[in-house]
Image (cartoon, rainbow, N blue to C red):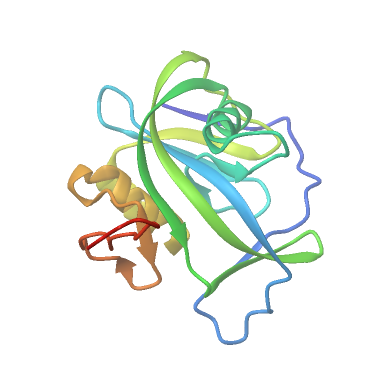
Length: 188
């Protein structure tokens, strides 16, 4: 099922994502954001086509003042797709210094917290931010223009065995025993 946005004209600035590009501009800010991997009962993935770049993505957006990351993920999904969701898990925290986004006069280095979620209401619809929204079978993801940073989140979200809290530029940080924190009075 897919919805196309025929009536909305986006007046948003053009977004340019740079990925491991030595010619990319230097970041001027870091931007915390949240995203969500949403699947329907058939296992299809909720994707939207960004109005500002034409690329496909999962619902994602910047954290607002006085908002938690979980509130941000739920709000962004509703704003961009019309669907109300509840969060079910943490997929991971993603940050790569070699990924910058030129947008609206600034160059952002994103830090994204990605969640998994399920639909609890709403109606699939387009918005000023999403020219199309659709449920996509995971086997068809290669048919869509999806940025590598988003593909990484999707890969982790679709494979429950690969869920990690910390992701480096080279992939998951291997599990290791936490270091002991010494407190005053420790005798070890």
